Amino acid sequence: MAEMPDTLPESQADGPAFRDLVRVFARIGWISFGGPAGQIALMQHEIVDQRGWVDQQAFLRALNLCHLLPGPEAQQLATWIGWRLHGVRGGLATGLLFVAPGALVMLALSLVYVAASGLGWFVALFLGIKAAVLAVVAQALVRVARQALGTRFKFLLALLAALALTVFEAPFPFVIALAGGAGALVAKSRPQWLSLHQVVRRAVPQPPATRLAGQTVATVAIWLIVWWLPMGLVLLAFGPRHVLWNIGLFFARLAIVTFGGAYAVLAYMAQQAVAGFGWLDASEMADGLGLAETTPGPLIMVTQFVGFLAGWRNPGPLSALTSGVLGALLTTWVTFAPCFLWIFACAPWMERLERARRLQGALAAITAAVVGVIANLALWFALHVLFRDRSPSGWPLLSSLDTRALGLALLASVLLLRLRRSVPEVLAICILCGWLLARA
Image 1: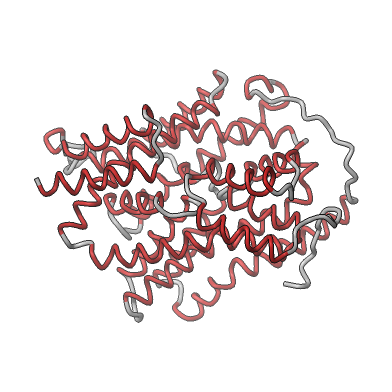
Image 2: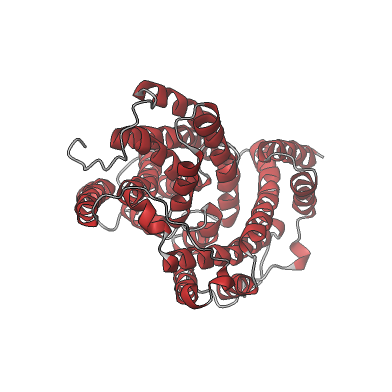
C-alpha cells in the first residue's frame, strides 16, 4: 500500500507516536459498546478531551463527513482519526483495530450458536434476547425520530418511507434514492423544509482541485481492487453459483446503500436473507441482532452472523465449518473495506463537501426517511417475535401471540425507555427472565 496517495493534512509535529495511536485504539476496539452514539462519545473522550490529538472543530467536521457517507459512521470516524494523525498507515490501523475485536467475538458467538441451537436451555436464553431486541429497535426509532424530524416535510418523508416499505413493499435502495433526490431538489429553494443552515467558510488553505482529483482517482482505483479481490478469488475457485459468491455480492451492494446507520438497512437485509435467499429464518435474524448488541464495534457486524449461517448451511464442496467461516470473513471484508475507500478518497475534500448544499439536503432527507425505515424494521421484528404463526397472506394470527415474549418486550421497553438502563444490562436481565420463564 506504499504507492497509495497519502493526502494527509499539514503534518502535526506534536501528534502521537504511531505506537501510541495503535495502543489507544486497541483498547477502544474492545470497549466500544453502546452503538454509534456511545462509540463516538468514547472517541471524543479518548482522542479529543483526554489527549488532545485532534481539536474539537476538526472532530466535528469529520463526524459530519462520516454522516454523509454510507457505512458505519463510528468506524469511519476511527479511520479518519488515524488518517489525520498518520496518513493511510494510521487510518488502516485505527479502522482495523476498531472492527477486529467485534468481528472475532461475533465469529465465536456464531460458532456457539450453531453448536448449541438445538438445546433447550439455549432456546430459552434467546427468548429473552429476541424480546429485548424489540425494545432496542424501539429505542433507536425514538432517538432517531427526535433528532431527524424537526419539520413537517421531514415527517412527511418518514411517513412516506414507512408506507412504501410496509404497504407497497418498495425496495429499500429505491426508497433511499427517492428521499435523497427529493432533498437535493428542495435544498436550494426551500432549505427551511430540511432545517439547513448556511455553512460558514473557514480560511483554511486548500490544495488545488486538479491535484486532489488525481489523488482521489488513484485512491479509488486501488481500493476498488482491494475491495473486490476476494470476490475474484471466490469466482475463480467456486464459480458464480456458490453461496460465497452470492454472499459477497449481496453484502457488497448493501455496503453502498447503508445510509443512516445499521438499523436503516436491517429490515432490507433481513427480508432478503430470510425470504429472498433462505439463509436463515426471521427468529434467527432476531437472534443475530441480539448477539450483535452484545459485542463491541459497529452493530452492522450482524451481517457477519448472516454470512456465517449462509455458508454453514450451503457448504457445497467445503465442510460446513470452513464454508461458514469463509462466509463470515467474506461478509466482513466486503462490508467494511468500502469504509476505507470512502474515507481515504473523501476526507481530503472535506471542506468542499461541507459547502455542497444539495448534498446536505439529500443527506437530511435520507436521515428523515430512515425514521420510516426503522419503523418498518420494528414492525417486521414484532410480527416475527411476538407471533408464532401467520396466515397465508403473511399477517400474524392473534391466537398465536407469545405472551412470554410480549411480557419480556414490555419489561425491556420500561428498562430502556423509562429507567434508561444500558443495552447490555437489559439484555442480561431479559436473558435471565427468559430462562426462568422457560423453566416454569
